[in-house]
Length: 257
Ligand SMILES: [Zn+2]
Image 1 (cartoon, rainbow, N blue to C red):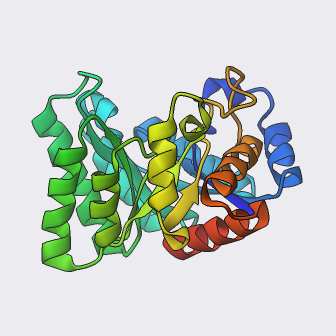
Image 2: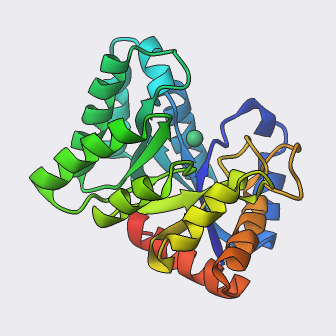
């Protein structure tokens, strides 16, 4: 079995065939799909999808690149969904992003802190988006770790270096790899993946973006998480069944599934 720990099923590219997409996921051995909001509307939509399809659970949040466009009441709606909706298993996605210049960094930091506080208050994990902001994210996590102990969170679609991965692992986080780890040019990511202990490893598609080899260039979808699991099995010298089983146990533990 597999769990796709990071998807955006509300995307327009799934509007026409989401039931078929989820059927293919189930046929590929995917037992659970986490659908994460990036703003108010997509958080509401993620909850609606989770309430419609038994395969799907939701996370709600305002992604750093969306934070600048958040209107009054948007954050309060995210909080309301997180408190009231039984199928919301995590807070996010949240995090920090220095690659896109869409939200002033101070505002990103403010939103990141709000998500972390909400997750702690509701005893739910949070999901971290980190792009070219590894040092900033680790700094925030160190403060959280110092104040509250082990951090229940995942570094999603990890693209950082080994030092960042180790810092996160020491604080209790999980490391999740998406399709990028399968790309021929991403040897650096495979080198990091090799060092991540099996009991902290997660897999995801981040669909509809960045499909793994050998379906690269197509619309990504949860069934393709099997390709990433197969690649990680190769990298770690384990069987595909072992990687699937262990990453599924990890996802169940993190998200309380
Ligand atoms: Zn995402």
